Every structure is written in structure tokens, then in C-alpha cells.
Length: 90
Image 1 (cartoon, rainbow, N blue to C red):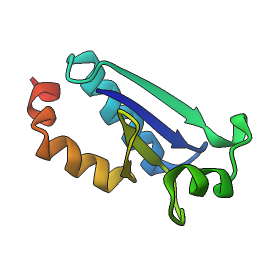
Image 2 (spheres, rainbow, N blue to C red):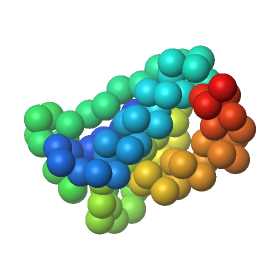
Image 3 (tube, rainbow, N blue to C red):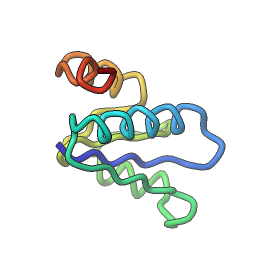
């Protein structure tokens, strides 16, 4: 699984999502990670809404293999449901 995180500077949930994905990557639970700084890349809320197909109120917005997962809470839950968390913490 390849994870893409759209986030912004100084966002605590973006930091937590990136840290979780980095733990998963280093444990071999995911194949890769890309963190996209929406400010640096010039990505707007409207751009993300077009990609996701619904209104976006917060960041991070996280995708796993091009499937929209949601924000940090949904990503954390997804990781647990997929059994990836136990791999990352070993």
C-alpha cells in the first residue's frame, strides 16, 4: 500500500499522520509514503474537493492506494482495522 498525505505546516494532526505512516513504512507494513505540503504545492481546498469528490474542511487528507481514507482519525482506525498497527509497533 502506498500512502499519500495532504497536509499543511503547523498542523498537529498532519504531524501525527506522517509519523504513523513513517512507522508503518519503516516496519514494512506499507510500500511507501508521500507527504504533500498543500501550501508549498499551491493546492487549494477546492482542488482537494475536486479530487476527493466531497467537501473538505480539515487536513490532513489521506489516501491509501488512491482510495480516500479521510483525516488522521480515520487513517488511525483504518490502520488498526487492516492489522497494520501491530506490524508497525513490533
